[in-house]
Length: 218
Image (cartoon, rainbow, N blue to C red; front, side):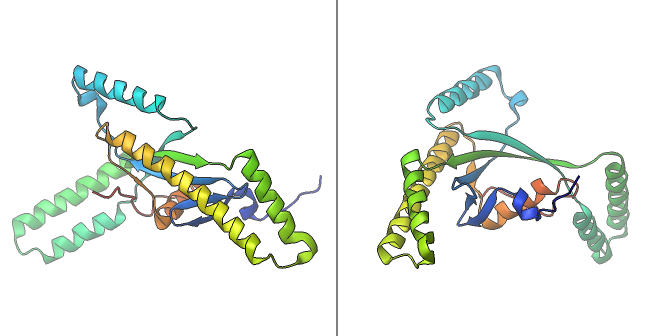
């Protein structure tokens, strides 16, 4: 049976990442919002019921599809251990040096037996053009390709206006998601370009340890 070797890029649905937005090859747009976690089990029964009620109200307020997912990742703490070792070298108190050394040995022994896992929580906010908009976009693309001619200024302005409209719709959805989460006292923030790149790198390379952490702004 003949084998077809396809470039890796052909297997990835992402076209580009720009200004905090993931552009998909099918024309769709996505923003990813990172949300801080809470320890539900430590809440009182009254607080738990309030959280559940608030989340139910939040879901009922949405008029578009969303996705929630948890990203679990093995954390590489080598850099942390190196920093502790450097701290030991600069310490002049012999008792503290011994304590630092014991702490390093404890951490190394613990990591050998237990993987350090970080969990990040995300909301995926999509926006796909309506059938009418998609048909318009298809028509514009057809005009662009016809005879390999250069699109007119009017056509470029129309296409640009459509993209800006789609981006505005997407950001309105994201702002609504963030506002709804904040009502439940959950901090949330959309990921920026470098954070999106890092996240997708990790998702497409699950065998590798995490390169860096993605943090929610305070």
